[in-house]
Length: 204
Length: 204
DNA sequence: TATTAATCTTGACATCGTCAAGTTACCTAG
DNA sequence: CTAGGTAACTTGACGATGTCAAGATTAATA
Image (cartoon, rainbow over all chains, first blue to last red; front, side):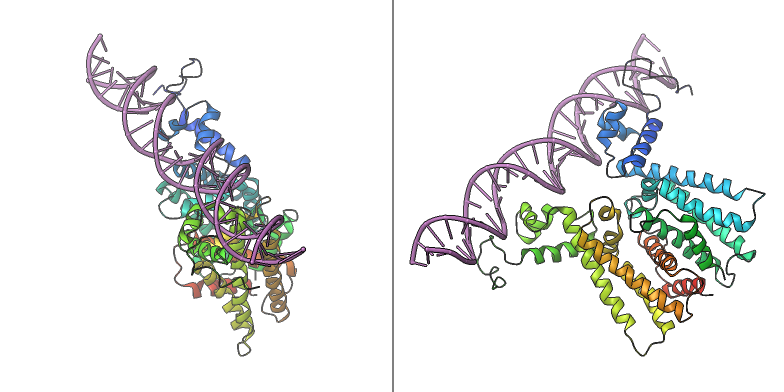
């Protein structure tokens, strides 16, 4: 208890008080603005006014820090999705449209974060924390439940296995976003048209 | 002329003779087996028996080397696709199926190379060479021409703009592959079922 | 107030990409 | 056959990075 309003008044550097939160915030900002490559533990420490190795008392290593950033990305996305879904006045068709558009916009507005969220840097091998895995898993479960709902309502092809369709549709979103983000698809204009095409290609 | 069968007999390290090709081959092998992270210029040089900086006479820098590996990945994929397409005995529906399956298999069999081919490491900013860009562009053009063909034959929804559909379908393939490769979709079993779902979801 | 535990620092190390300057071997003009 | 040029390769060096180990400082607890 009572750990919050400690530092910032005294000139001492020990016991910053909220270093972990501060680090996460600054690191997220750095990654968001300049990309994953540009984030170095040393620079991060320096920018906050703390020594290079202070970070290691709050994050096991760099991967651990990146995991935390990615995880907060998933919760940000969950917040967005929740607000899209819970618009009572909109039709399901409108919501489907907004969901897809929202996904693409989120990914392009937070390109570097998105890269982190799905990048092999974290998902390969031992790198990703259990916490990240479960947060990400929840996002997929939510997507799955939406697909199921839209199948039942006849918006999506209901002849197809729900799990598989969820995988394919998420794959579609993810793939398109990656291609846009990585600069392979030049036009981030005309997103509406692209969304229409996605829906048209999935609707029967 | 007559530059080939020089070295390998004399113990001298100068004028290896085919260093560029050897480097590319070894680097590709390293990336394929151990991943992009694990490839260091120094280790590569050492593994071939050449000094760390010798590589810089054949590749401008590490990115340039990675570009070359990625580019050869695209041509490998082009070769595979050509052989799939040119099976005269198969129906177009079979070919469509094999194309999708072939794409997924290529990407998973060469996961690290695939990661390089589409990774932001090369596509962001100035990193990718013009040569890589044009090779990759050809792959997409080919995909586009296939989509157009299949639309005309009624295999795919022809109400949709061809370019957009090509983007969406490639996005679908790419996204699913990424999710499998990065370990987000655990099951690389049941690929056939997945392929069926992709086709079912795109066919009207 | 004394002890313990948490937090942060300085010093150090190995690894990496890459530049600069020097060395060696091949190639070609005379 | 040789002189000079050029391409290929080497060693040395630099700055940056992630991270460990050992020590210093402060807060929390008994």
